[in-house]
Length: 303
Image 1 (cartoon, rainbow, N blue to C red):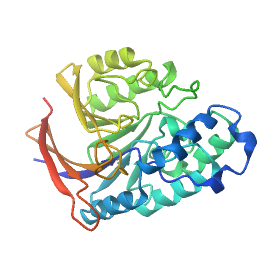
Image 2: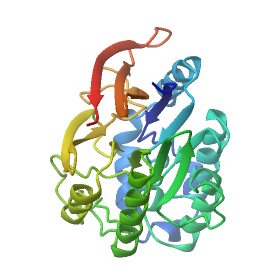
Image 3: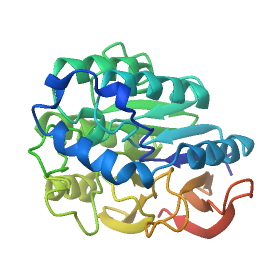
Image 4: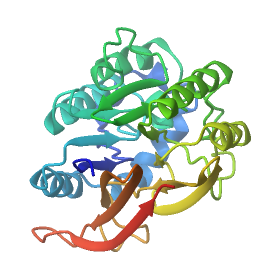
């Protein structure tokens, strides 16, 4: 029996965007204009920094060995947003202890400003010994556990929020998974868009079928995602049995907004008699100054 390893999964933080971030009118002559209308018209009343702060305090009190952030720290991919996103990641811990990947809002437009902004988050979006900040997949190894970070963030037309891995990234993922399988590592894949279950219209993973084929051949122990703003459980077929695909709700939504309330997921991984055992505790926001409630306890046993 190996020593257990606990880590946290959070996603879709949507840190606040302010009017002061929007000082360049020319930056809104594109799909960002419509995203700004959505944020200032409605979504800023859904996502609350006070909820995020409360949940982070609760999470850090549990002292997980690692924290995984699966994207959408920002809303409009503006410079001020990246500044705050970088500071927020630093408040969680060092890049040794925190891993992040981008979501579609973190690359709303594939332009120089957004690429420069993501460079501010780069220390958290690169693997062990990796120098290139925008190479995916990347890997971080913790004991016999390997975190595999993918990017599904692409620029899409107005009204779309879909994602795509692309051929190069998929080929590298296949190699990483196969090598880690031979080494008997616990392979935990992180991506923003869900690779299983219902897909948002114009907002799903475009190469979902090819991704499923990779998992069917190489397997994985756990796949984690965000994007849907709700906690969910699905599976993909693997060579040794079903592979759990787990989504987590947005970290910043308070109760009473007709959306799934904020939560963070706490996983515990342990190898028992050569088999990886994975359990999940769901910590749900209960209100300001109140401890989170333990909403669910799930055992995910890998074969």
